[in-house]
Each structure stands twice: as structure tokens, then as C-alpha cells.
Image 1 (cartoon, helix red, strand yellow):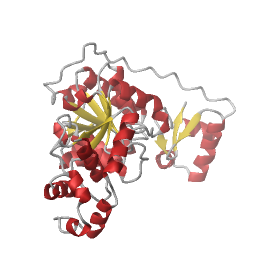
Image 2 (image 1 turned 90 degrees about the vertical axis):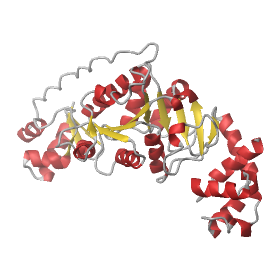
Image 3 (image 1 turned 45 degrees about the vertical axis):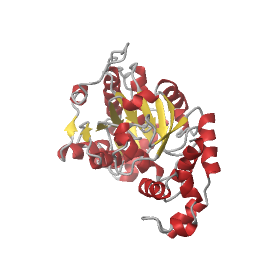
Length: 371
């Protein structure tokens, strides 16, 4: 049996061998090890198999699969094969279900009701506070919060679920043992110890461009409902929402200001039929079977932001006028140009003076805010 598990893992990780080809191979060859031992010419006759795919199968081995299993164990995890009873039932019926998962943490979370909470890496203060509240209150009510362990709102959702005394599942776009982004090192450890880390990539594999859409379909696949908090045009959170719709799952979204680029995605989802999340109860109505944890924690009141720094006396008239257009919410440069009616070079000169004076800070994407 150990040999067949290793052979299954080896086949599952062959490039270009998706779930359909894998099952076809095993059905025709009777066992995973039989598929690895089959002659090249025979493999080419298997329905759906191409010459390059058959060559890739011949280039792998049972020993390669066993090496991956050993690495998973050393990383503190284990492999769940599609035929294992612990493999999450909810993932078995999505398009292209993963044939193997590598997991670390509490496997019991895989059979509990779950909601995906996803959003932008470059979020606003409004998005962060809303994401924290929704994830916190959902987890405190007994809903497992699923997200993608990315920088930004994913990290906010995971941390809030754990802070609430609830549970979370972090779906990785890389293998176990790889902490990406590096800033999530503490969060990675918290989720491994108090929740569950899950990935279809082998231990040690670094993330790449194609790994994140694959990760996103698992995020939505594990969840009864996917909530998009903030998502600019082209955001990965919208890919997750699209995967949820393809899987026949519910999509909800947090409405935001029509002037905010980060709210373009959620607002369009709501326009096109997604349920709005005006309060966490809107989400919890989909989870009548959720069982709260033994000691849920009430959501704390929003943190009161300190007052804005007074403007230095030496600031010029142009700098004061530009400072008056800014608050704590980041504003894009193009929006500032429209608000101020100034030429771009004049506005940048004023913003530069304000940064030097410690009145304004600049973030990714040429966003500016008062401090």
C-alpha cells in the first residue's frame, strides 16, 4: 500500500498529467505503480494521453513519489490522496479536483462549514477594518475562514479568525516549508499550530505565476461562500470569485466607495448578482449549522486613529492646498490630479515637500495619505 501511495503522488506531480489523465491511467493500468511501469507505447494508447505526457510519466518513478512523502513528513505534514477518507468531501466534485493535498495542522477543519474571505494586497483602511470584522465574527460564530496566505487582506482574515478564538485554513501557492511572503512568517506558524495549512504543491516548491490561479480554485472549492472584500481590476480575488461561480458556490461582496479603485471588483460583483455583505449576519445566514468555538471572543471596537499631524508653519500655499485634499485613506496620484486641478509636475513637487516635512506618506502604486 505504501508503494501505491508513493506511485500515486509521483503520478500526480508529473507536469501535464491532470486529474482526468491520472484517473484514466490508473483505471487502464489497474494500479498507480502499474501506470509507472507500463511501456511507453502502451501509455500512448491510453485515452487522453499524448506522446509528451507519456514521456513525462516514464521519466518519473515510485522512488520519486516516496521522496516527496518523506519530505512532507519532515516538514511536519502529511499527504491526503483523493481516495483517502480524510480528503475533503467538498473538493471531490469541483472541476479539476486536486489528486493529492499536502497538509499541516488540524485535519478536522476540512469537514466543517467554511467561508472564503479574500481581498486585495494593496487595501485601504476601510477594507482592512471590514475584512477583520467579517473574518473575526464569522470565526467566532463557528465558520472556518479560508484564505490564501497572501500579503494584505488574506493575512488580515487569517489573523482575525485566530484572534477570535476560531479556526482558519491557509491555502498556499507553494509547498509546505516555503514562507511566502516572508513577512508572513509569524502568521504561517500560527496557522500551522492553530489551524490548517494546505497545498497541492510538493514541499519546498517556490511560488510561480501559474500557481496562484490553481490555489484560488481550492480556496473557493473549500468554501460554501466566497466573500470578496476589496479587489481592484484584475485582482486575484476576482479570479477566486470566478472559480466559486464555476463551482456552483455562493459569491458575496463588501460594497465600497464608487471612487475607490479597490472597490471596483466588489461593486461590480454586487451589480451582477452577488449578495452584498452589509453586516456579518448577511454571511452567517448561509451557515445555520455552524457551531461556535468553546470560548469565542467578541469583536473589539474599531481602533481610534490618532489625530492628523498639524501642518508645519513653513509650508507653502501649494503644499497646504494639497495637504487639505488628503486624509488617512490612500489616494491615487491620478485622483489627486483631478481633485486639485493642478498639473502633474506641480502636484508631485508639492507632495515631495509634504513627504520631506513628514506630513504625507507614499505607498505602492503612487498612493498618498496624511499622517
